[in-house]
Length: 159
Length: 312
View 1: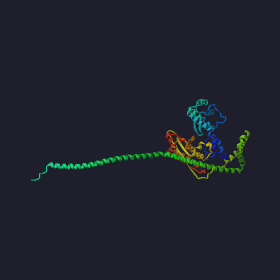
View 2 (view 1 turned 90 degrees about the horizontal axis):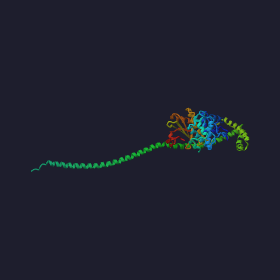
View 3 (view 1 turned 180 degrees about the vertical axis):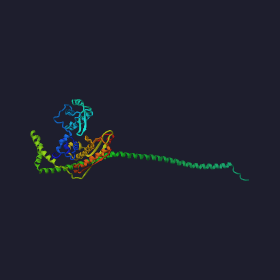
């Protein structure tokens, strides 16, 4: 019971922030705060903000209609990326796209983002805040969001 | 009348007789040598065959010795993972002891809180968690909201109190446990150097962290990762990302960087060692870890070396 009152363990802090425990370690090291691995609850918001962590997949999140639910969620995430203006230099943490989704969907998103980056439609960059993503080819991405065919290598993940 | 003197012809005949007899003797002796020579030839063939046979046996032994040398890496790889798995099991046992010690300390905190000015708040908090919260969903939304809001205010007072305490890591009453952390540096041609670490921690600690209680394994892995990040940042790679994977049931991590591979191994080993040595929670749990750098051939599985694949 006292776990809910004492400073947070790495796992608990990770759940609160929305990342994994080793990302919390990375953030603590960057901020020079890794002396103790018990994280005060008062630091959580600052860590979340520092990392650029956002929760897009709320119940109110806009959904793209699709007869395949998994593909629909990928389309919705890509639509949110575009709508939120993450184009060119305006990057966001890549895991913002799938935070809050079931694990299998997160894996599919991860694969899809990597393959779309290889195809030049998205751009990935490792930054101090973490791995970030932005739209590289707005027109091609819009075609995919509007129902265009995904490359075969991606499509196999939701078939 | 006297004896007729010998004739020259007689002398010739005598010489001829002597010559025939002498040649006969020598030829007879020569025949004896011929037999011995034939016998020696036969022996030489046998000796040559024996030398050839012995040479082949020697070469075969050399080849086997060479093969044993090549087998060292594979055997070291197997033995290293066996040892680290054994250590990971010991970590799990120590984690149980740590959890028991933490439970004991929680009882002390409860007693301390229960006898101080926050005693009513603690009682209220405990009552909510044990009696109110389980049935809260049956109440109207507005009532639930008010009750939860009040509970959060009580909880905030208690968490503030805990944050104000100088919480030290819980000490475990147990024998010191010494572990190994293995590092290796791989430098694929024309690619970034890869610093790999294998930890004496079960891979589930990382892969299933969301379903598990944070245990000792998480702390050991976190400190090792802290060392990797500190070293990468010190080298100017603040954007570096540690990648995680399970290998043979253990946590395997890697980080890609530019740099002189000769310097990378000792630098990262030193930073990881320092992070582990300075960790107060590991000291309290009586955990010591020794970081060692091994050749990459002893850390990557043989099939990865043949195929040039990554660990993980």
